[in-house]
Image (cartoon, rainbow, N blue to C red; front, side, top):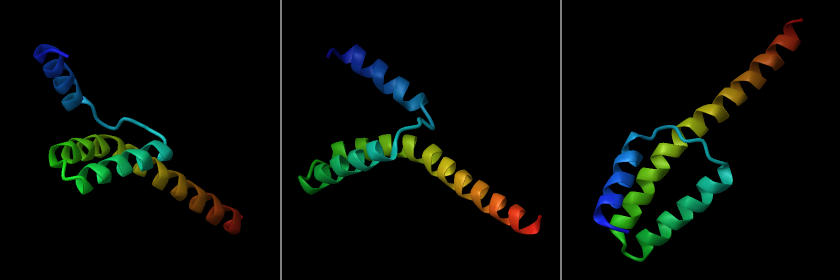
Length: 80
């Protein structure tokens, strides 16, 4: 890959936020990041964690909203 293409990909990545991925994907990506850290590949670890940061926030919020919705529905059924 030439320098210009790498730059374009990097610039596009910086603009991304809240990319939704499956929990399985996040677990696998986390494993890969930890493997890089264990092998001493600090820059690859940092890049992996940067990617994780762009995917995790939205997924965690979605999970919490689902849990909150379930709790509200449970409370509403007890009040009725």
